[in-house]
Length: 143
Image 1 (cartoon, rainbow, N blue to C red):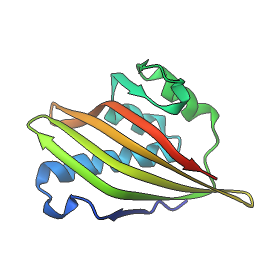
Image 2: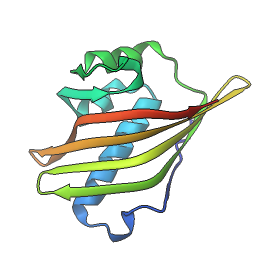
Image 3: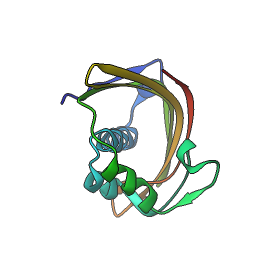
């Protein structure tokens, strides 16, 4: 399985070291989600994570159990490609956020599924490690 990530038209042009660190953690999280790698997810996500996403049916989800469940029961795609469109990462001392549109193409058998979502992820630096503390994901289109 090959992971490809592309960036378009975002604010990664003036990267400093902290932005690079946040981007690296974001990529590890997105990669871990696609590979159903719960260990990576737990490494870079706080246990008291909060989120709003389509799967939560409009309710705030607290903690990791909801997300780890999907990492166990949904099969990995045969292959996939991620596009991060118009990314913005901003860092404020030990807090940061990333905002972007994520396009995901997945192949399973003869089928290819393409989905897109607008995502915002918030990070906090603890003991030198950036960890995601909240995210909001809204699907935009699926076919």
